[in-house]
Amino acid sequence: MVYDGDCGFCKLWIARWREITAGAVDYEPLQEAAPRFPEVPRAEFEHAVKLIEPDGRVFSGAEAVYRSLGQGGGTKFWSWSYEHIPGVAPVSKAAYAFIAGHRELAHTVTSLFWGKDVQRPTYFHARRWFLRMLGVIYLIAFGSLWVQVDGLMGAHGIMPISQLLDDAHKQLGSRAYFLLPTLCWLNPSNAFLHLLCGAGALLSVLLIAEIAPILCLALLFALYLSLTIAGQTFLSFQWDILLLETGFLAIFLAPWRWRPRRGSFAPLSRPALFLLHFLLFKLMLMSGVVKLTSGDVSWWDLSALDFHYWTQPLPTVIGWWVDKSPEWFKHFSTAFVLVVEISGAFLLWMPRRLRLLGCGAIIFLQIVIGLTGNYAFFNLLTIALCLLLVDDFAWPGARRLTNSAPAGRAWPVWVPAVVIVLTMPVNALLLFSGFKPGTQWSRPIGAMYGAVAPFCIVNGYGLFRVMTKERPEIIIEGSDDGLEWKPYEFKWKPGALNRAPGFVEPHQPRLDWQMWFAALSDARQNPWFLALVFRLLENSPDVVHLLGKNPFPDKPPHYLRAEIYRYRFSTLAEHRQTGDWWQRTDERPYLPPVSLRAE
Image (cartoon, rainbow, N blue to C red; front, side, top):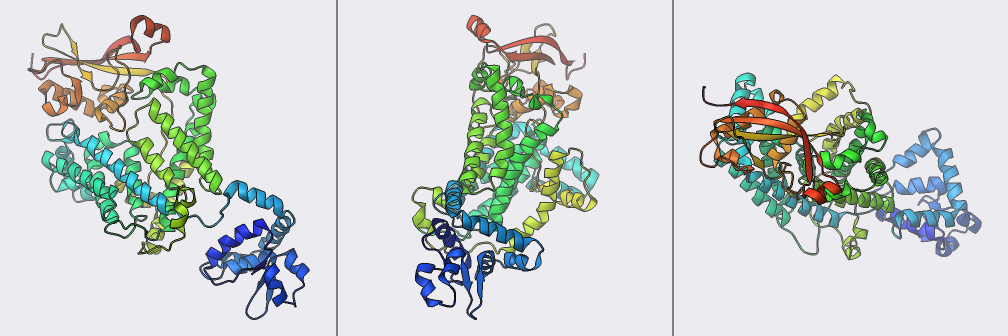
């Protein structure tokens, strides 16, 4: 391949083509090579690149580019398309002629979008830190659940896993093992639940230390899936399924090593990297699109954040102050959220500087969300996925690393390729359903989704599809005589008006979260809430442990009831006058007085 050695645009892209063709093509500047080929006029060399094949045939311009890229490790797709698909050749020739006639402009555009290096990006640093951060997130998830597991799903908890498994086996027989894929089938005891959490925490530490990453990731996925099934409604949040989908796909990205090696890195699977990039794309695009297709006008008139900060499940004190910002700022912020989620998703596929711009915007959005609301490890997990967009050239001191040759093995390319083939039809329909809610699934894709759904490895997303416009809050009260009622206090959800919203992330108090959902519907629609009432009437230590303060520490109350109020943030004037962070009105019954003892 002979090119103009004085053309900055040519030199940039020749460096990338040299990498693609892997030594199968020699690249020389015309200033050196032209005298060796007198049969080709120098003016022709200056007009377009030339590919001179061993048999003496000479190809020019776009055709030369396509034929050269099909050599070595390249793909013959483009040269085949040039020769066989109508329209490709004339369009390619026209595009090449335009670029050749405006090489300075092309060089400027290339430098603007790609920077000083247009070689195929590598992501060895990104993979290393992504897997470490994923280990940290798994550690947070297991540790957060560990301190709650007895009260949520233990034998004397709100929703015992043993009862779920018994009922499922009676109704479904052997199908229950597939529909509820959990290791708790082996042993549903509290001790075994603690074993799952402890093993998950230990494996998370090993993953952080880069010890046997593939084995750790496979076991972490199995353990967290088991606890997700066992937790039922308490582990039905979008970050739980996002962690499972991310953890599953990360198995195919992880290096084949038992322990880390300094100064060397294992090959990286491009199909596996694509799967994780696509997961972030799906997460962001669906999160933005479903807001606009949900029918909620507050996203269209940009008033959604007028309500969000005080109606979200667990606000923070920063959210309280941001809620006091001018209306124009909240409307601007709503537009910013939509722009980042939708356009940012497409930037992930753009040239490196646009890709990094989209990555930075998403990370900034996740930090702001984390400061104004408590969303467990969701923001950290999204940021971890963003790390995989940062190629090695952007990491400090990475040039030396990218100039080294990978050592070791990676997954055979067909393994993640099979995952792509099996999951992409379902992913495509999930994305389409975001644009068109209520889309009917074809029978084959529905069957595919039904086969993978119990394992949570292909999921749809969309936080705050419909913005809540008011805040009903449940206050549970107990009484010994039916006259004097004492409220139970939760650790984090709003209750006392003078208690400031706090920071609890990345820990998730799952009962506090579920109380927010329960307030949006009737008590009869939340069987777990009635089970909670039963456990409080027993004064179950495991369940009481989930609360902030038990007004009946010595013996359980005789009666228990639940009232519901409308809460809102206090205004600045109200806060200065009373010190209250919340105001509440409109008291009404949620659950009438109940008792375990016959009257």
